[in-house]
Amino acid sequence: MGPNFDLAFQLIPLQLLNTIYMVSTSTFFAVVIGLPIGVVLTITDKGHIKEHLFLYKTLETIVNIGRSFPFAILMIVLIPFTRWVVGTSLGTTAAIIPLTIAAIPFVARLIESSLKEVDSHVLEAAIVMGSTTLQIITKVLLQEALPSIIAAVTLTIINLIGYSAMAGLVGGGGLGQVAIQYGYNRFNTFVMVVTVAFLIILVQIVQFVGNRLARSITKKRGKLL
Image (cartoon, rainbow, N blue to C red; front, side, top):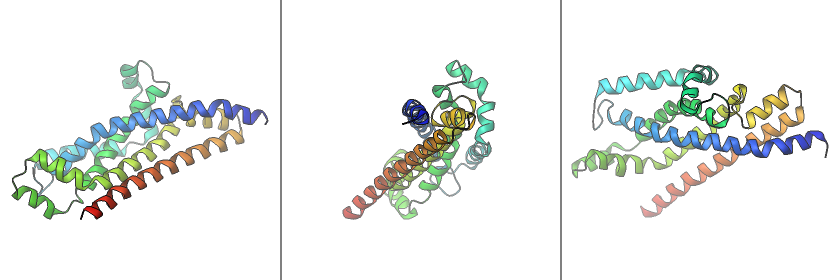
């Protein structure tokens, strides 16, 4: 098959798994942290069920600052913090820290947008029936916005796949490191092309699954109605 094929075959399977590990883990933590922030941003906004403009403006400022950082700079800035958390700034586990921190404000803003799309009449009906704040959040806002939330998480995963490739610049592992270390630095076009192809395929799979899941939920609701 040739040395280039053998090199790609040796490197890509393991680094593909590393990419999936980095992206899935950082997505999990970003959603766990970002979703509550998005909920608070929604319910504390002007005219919502728990209006608190000071809290809203404070969180909004923090989220906007977080979203404004270019990922390449964020990785470098977070090196001391990453070392403190995992003991090193190199490797796939270390890359999860900046990936997660970069994704949290992104998730929070997408969740906020999704929840604010919920029909106000549905909220008013829940309030009239005496629903608590927690019930409104869990049984109205999150359930009604579920297809949109799935689309938001899908978009987050796709962005993190791109970020994970950039993490290869600072020894983050994954397909990005293969493309940079063995493709770009060694002028190996074959390895570079194959690595990019795998990244594209991975993105397409994520987008397909996310779209199907969101459509499935929407169709089930349509049948119930």
